[in-house]
Length: 210
Image (tube, rainbow, N blue to C red; front, side, top):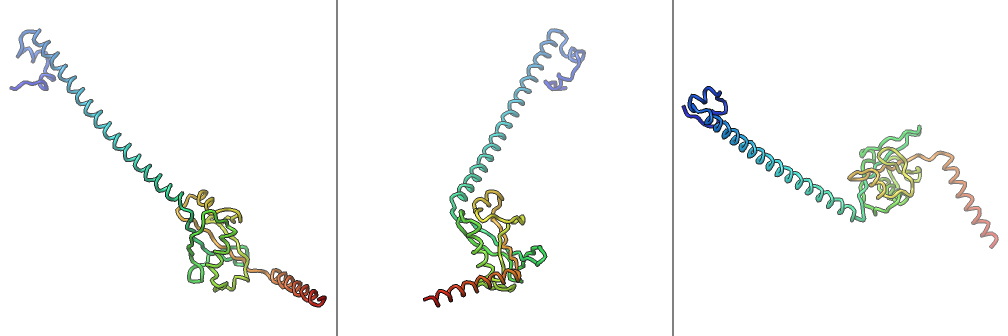
C-alpha cells in the first residue's frame, strides 16, 4: 500500500504505528502533515485572493469605461445648440376634451430642430405652420382656432419655458409637445368683427377730416 500525506491525514495513531513503531516518529510525521496542509491551504487562499483581485480590477475597468462613454455622450449633447422636437396635434371636441389627431386626419407627428433656447412662444407659430401648412388643415383654416402647447403629460406649457429647460426636466431622448387647437366661438368671431369694424370706422373718420 502506498502511503502519502493524503492517506496519513486519515490514519489513526494505531494504524500509523503499524508502519512507524516509535512514537516519536509518529509525532514527527503528524507535524509534517499539518505543516504541508497549512502550506496547501495558504497557497489556495493566495490563488483565490489573486483571482478576486483580478476580477475586481476587470469590473472596475469596465465601469470606468462606461462612465467615460456616458460622459462623452453627455458632453456631445451639451455642445449642441439645436435640439430636435416632435410635435403632435390634439384638437378640442367642444366639450373640454382634447383628442389626438391621427396622421390620416391631417395630424400625426411633425419633426423640427430648433435652438435650445427657443421659448414656447416662439415654438407655437412653428407648430401651427407644420400642422396647418399655408394656414389650412382638414379641420379648417388656422384662423378658426386658438392654440396652446402641452407637454407629453398634458400640462400646458408656459410661454417663457425653453426647449433646453424641458429637456432637462423630462430627461427624454427626444422632446415631444402637442399643439392643442380650440375652435373659436361665435363670441370670438363677433369680437374680431367688431374690432375690424371699429378700425374701418376710425380710418373713414380720419379720411373725411382730411
